[in-house]
Every structure is written in structure tokens, then in C-alpha cells.
Length: 76
Image (cartoon, rainbow, N blue to C red; front, side):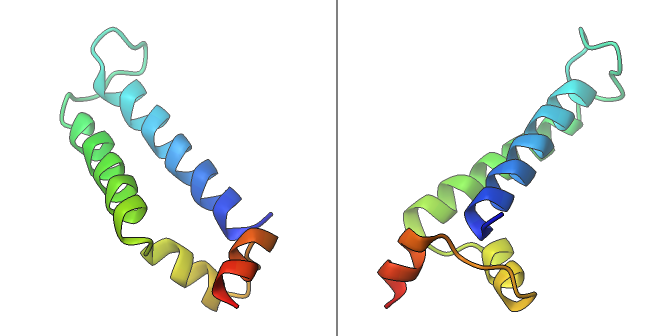
């Protein structure tokens, strides 16, 4: 997996989980406050798309995860 793939999987999983925990119609509802986490993830995705910088991508690269071919060509 590449950095982009991991970011998409993690962000999507966080959004789905926080919706499941925050929507009262869900069978695993805990608190509506979990919807703030959904908004936080969405805001970070928006910021990342605008600024082209993502903290998680930086951390994953430092841990040795490789970029996609397209990202390597852009960075070169």
C-alpha cells in the first residue's frame, strides 16, 4: 500500500466509525458528540486538499512507507 491508500482507508474508516457511534439511529450509538470527530476528519481532508500537506502523510513517509508513482513524479 502507498501513503495515499493508507490515508484514504484510515480517513474513511474514521468517518464511518464516528458516524456509527454518533447517529442515534445506529445500533452502536454512544453519543452525538462523535459527530464532532466526523467534522474534524472532514476539515483535515479539506485542509490537506487545499494546502497539499498532510501530517499523517509526513509521518507515514518517515516510517518508511512509499509514495505512489504519481506522487514520486510530482516530487521530482
